[in-house]
Image 1 (cartoon, helix red, strand yellow):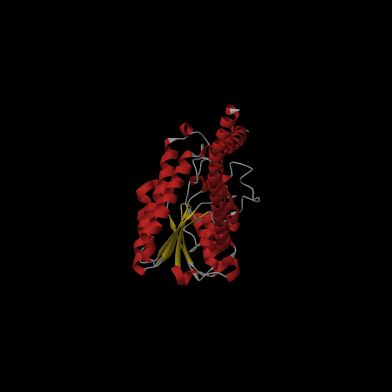
Image 2 (image 1 turned 60 degrees about the vertical axis):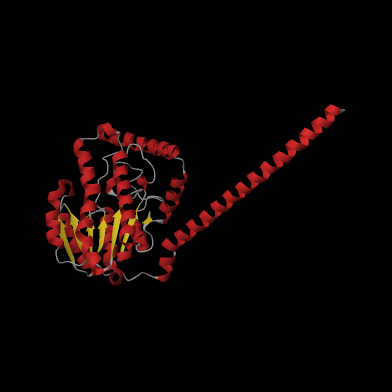
Length: 331
């Protein structure tokens, strides 16, 4: 009988202790649920504020807010060209910078005739390093630049292992994806600070979200650009300068023509024109955004994933693209 009483006493003590832990876990669970719900509400509001509300209330006067002239690098194709056209639609005069004079002339003429704005262009090959910037400095001298779009970028021929990349590719990736943004900002920012207004848009990539195998150097260069943009925003926001990091996922452009999957427009792979029309509506509203509402959903999910899951899926996807590209190369 005494043994039974001792067992009952022990059982009651254990039950009392367990009850405390259950209540503690319930509180933690409730806190976690509320936190996640609030995060979801905030993310939903942010998405509506960036991608829906601007469409409803109308476009801001970009010329009045930032200035009459915009400089766009890598502007003869893809996102750069589309973004330049969106700016021109809003009455902004455009200075195009790229390496092909023929393409620059054609795009410059097309924008000028279509949107009735002034255009100019500067021929520059950013892969040449420091020598490319003297012509740019001369071309932008005495111009009141209100907007700078650092879009020029170099992508892999196809996703590949780091040791398969040539030294030329490594240096070009640094000069084009990293150095160009630094130098262009260094050239135009003093004038913006003097006027106490201006906008800088740096086109990064969603590959900066988490480590992306087989796009290692590209992703690292875009992570640099993202960090550079965010730090610069805080450094110069008080001086009237808005700095934005655009972090898109795949855009159906020539840059990703190595794959039949990514080079065709689809639900998650918008055309450059579609992307630019959304991205420009976020100017002045978000310092860091994918620029496209579907990509915003992907980016939010991507940041929530454990690093190893992101890396596994990224490498799996890149291997598929690499295999397809190599197959076409053999043919």
